[in-house]
Length: 638
Image 1 (tube, helix red, strand yellow):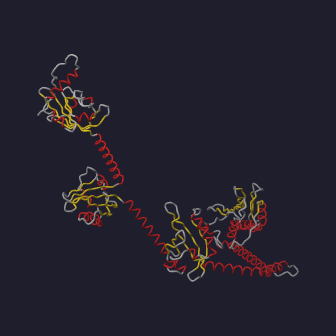
Image 2: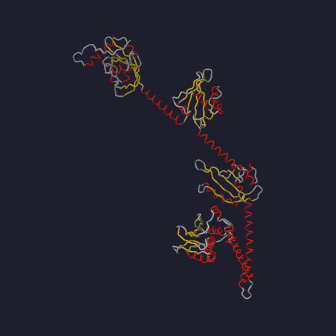
Image 3: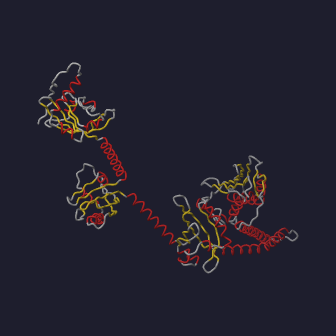
């Protein structure tokens, strides 16, 4: 049957009082009643209608009336566009491309009697009747729900695909029966291939897998095909396309289908680039190995402890220090090992550490060894916190300082004993030498006078050394008492300068005091303040260029008064800066000996300043002046 687009006019004329529409419906009804397909139309359960040459509905079944919500008999004779707004006669015929006589149209808009719209699909067949002309039969189907489901499926598929691409996961399918492999676009992306590039994927992949890893990479597929496991994963190295680096790939293979006999015939796989994760894992493993090596090989005792004091891990050094085996030490805790008199101070610091008030702390405390002996340990404690900042583990390091403390106590006792035993007779000797030097009744010979002078000078030096040693020991042991009160600072400076004029005369220098405000006040111990000034002034005079001026400056810096002493002369070597305030330290021993000194003056000065609440420092740029400075607090530091 061929189709034609000839539209013959409808037969018959309108009677008086009848409209064209009523005539058409009547004519159409009489014509269709004679049609042999009427009974078939009425019995069909799918919506079906016939459109005449004038674009009106010649016939429809009850399913069509129900679809468009029209009462029985109310659709026949109506214009098709009343229920199919877009389906004019010309448009319907245009959808059929000769020599075909039918077509399928999806996405047509349908409109019910109430004005609601729906989405329809239609099977359209056209033919030409010898009497009635061109006709179209439409079998309709409501695809509104289908379209929604299809749209939802497309959206879900898009989201899934986006997620796969975002996660960098490539998928493939291998069909054992046809020996074919299908890969997604992401697979090509991981292999750094263009989407349209003609490449044998299996050979490309095999050629890029590290030779040492090829067996590992193929094993999951072989195991799944053999039915040994339902899912198998592995990691292997894949060479980048430029051949410059190896990338780590994670492969996950699973069984997708078996035949009736249970033989695996299809498998699925996923591949992802895990290079970054491998790098992190490698760095973490190396970090753990370094920590483990340091922990086990450390010369000092180290332990990992729970927040309640139980040992989790201990190293050999701490076992040796306490005299326990590792097994026995892990059964005890820090509270048991700590001397009762030192436990409270340690726990107080530990509570501050747990509360986050401090990040770590150190203290010296006593422990019990396995044999009951007392061990002095220098304890350093650091807290490790979990992801929620809660105390998780504690790192404790202990250095056995028992011998150091014993030697320190012996040294202090020895120095104190020797100093006191020397100072009393030395005072008598110096008094006798001074008396002999002042005797005029029986003058000594020049040789005797020279010997007396040498003895007196050496006695004074020895006396100064003994005093410095005693002061140093007292300050080091925190036994030197200071008496701080607020007072004018400038008069103390003037007094110190006057007392040091002998040094100025001896080394050919002058002292100049700059005091913009003579009313400056600070907390100081007058005696110790004078000792600090005497040490700084004498030190500046010794090392100043002969004929130069030493400047003493006072200034208000807010919370404290700063006093600085500046001299012109040889600057302090940079290599000696860190050791300058250490006891007995000498930048140039020969120069120091020429100018005399005990090597304790600056160390004592630093301890006095810090124990009276101030700070001390120096500036000595190469080729410039050297300035020593210290501060005295305006508010009582104690």
